[in-house]
Length: 184
Image (cartoon, rainbow, N blue to C red; front, side, top):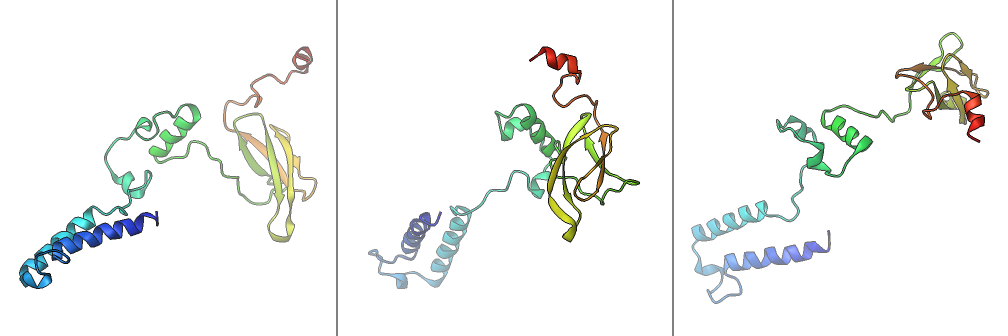
């Protein structure tokens, strides 16, 4: 971007010279009346402000874009988006999050009031970072299953799984041990 700045300044400087008559055969700045000079400078300033190479464009998801009454479609923004990417973009255009990828945050889970982790399936991999401050520990990863509370072996925090979707196994296959043996 900065490499283009000197070229832009040269263009601006040459347009000022032509407006003011500097360097030409017109006799310099003194040959213009004060009124003519002021009008030409104002016209040049106005046109150079509107055609500046440094003017930015408004971002795609700016607050101003949300106020617009236009109905945008994903194809207008990213014509080749498909599947989950398209769903996510459509949701974002409507002002909502489709895939909540933020880590769940909540109070420390106890046996009486365990930390609730939501899942679309009957089991999910969960990471426990421990409590706040000095109670933090390296993340311990484990499978959290429906109707089976889990206690972190490091900090004794309790977790339970809340199924918010249809449930079922995350891999889409049954958990039947006999089926697994047949496929090996």
